[in-house]
Length: 140
Image (cartoon, rainbow, N blue to C red):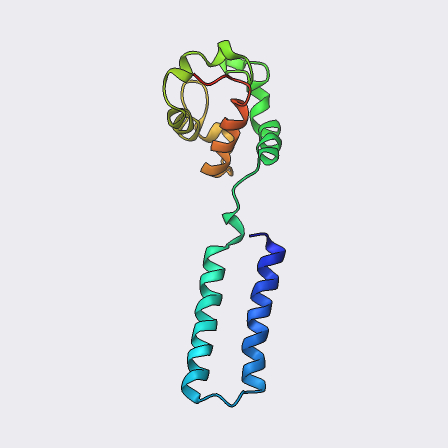
């Protein structure tokens, strides 16, 4: 859910709750308390399930992050770093699973430092960057 829609929905729910408090309808106190409780629970669930960090990184975000951090080594194949799109560079690396590539990216391997020298990248971002780098490498 996009931030704008999330804010609008939360605002609407809060508005309904406030309107009930200011101008109570003739419903019973028990029904009013139940409606209040359900609205508060819905707000809590909505907030927990749609945190700002819950949107997965996009391919364009991966490209930007790759350019900012990974390209320094990977565009030139520095110290054996595989170049994106060059199938031969990825040969033995692709003998294992993509999960292994993700793990090596996160933990570091050989000359590549942990997290690919991007300490502020999340695991999800690193996975998306790996996928971005492999976009032109044919899958077996």
